[in-house]
Image (tube, rainbow, N blue to C red; front, side, top):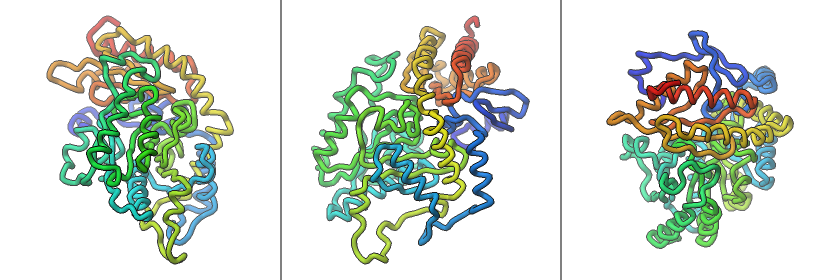
Length: 431
């Protein structure tokens, strides 16, 4: 079982047997609201008709296409649509199958790009504390969540350093949107440049909003300052938008929301609404062109996956974009965001709530841990929420919320009231 207490699960198994719209059905018949859009990946809900039809049709027409030395038209069309959605129509796209693969691909692109330009000394990567960039060796190395890294320390890529994370409960508790405090933390990148020398640094990788560690929102001006420093020193800036891509902040990508353009963008999850695994990297056109040297028949970038641009994933991707763009689902999510913000912050003052953070259609609540038993309060809230008809995501004693874009105002309000009752029940307070 993945990121799961296996012994606890075997003693208390919970099985999903169906999903439709914004709800899952459990094996015991309970229908529960999907409070995190699957795993941040299903903003259109489940069994979305257009996606179901597209995948069913595709499997009859072309179920698999080898991605080496051959291509299929729909994959190129999807790449063009994603680049256009990002407002970067000249970008190239490298398809992978997950966020983890997308991150490792982006790191490889960065290293190979500098080598292609004659700057092979640029091998160092800069990540950030509390970052989650997947479970590939590259992603683990630039990631900054200690329990995730600890077991696999011997496998870490050498020459990686980390920026400090940007969260301070003292200075930004219960902030709505971007905090005013913390811009100065971007200057730590200048310290790392001075320490290691710019000629050794290939790339800086950050999540615009740190999702898996508990929705840490960047301070105002922080991302723009990272962009300035990277540009000044010839360092590539990578945005890991596996969670924020495709509308979670009310814009197609977080790069649009914050008005900061990185050199590479990783994506996954919502690109297919979670129906078929897919990830990828948006790459600036001039970075791509740096590889296009030597004999025309030679392989310029020795990297790829058997299932890159899988026809079923591509079909799901097109259908997802049809809904996100053509049916105005990104705008729908954006319209829900102010209501969601007011509702989630109404939980301030509830038992054990230490902090609430939000941006776009996502938020997190930090809960006061039980003495000597970290994670127990989060688990209790999770279990009680199921009884309230809610499937919430908890990590330790942090609860994350990112409801589907198809949610109604009534469903958002009901989610928060159910969570309120869950917090009180899990803390032993009167409901």
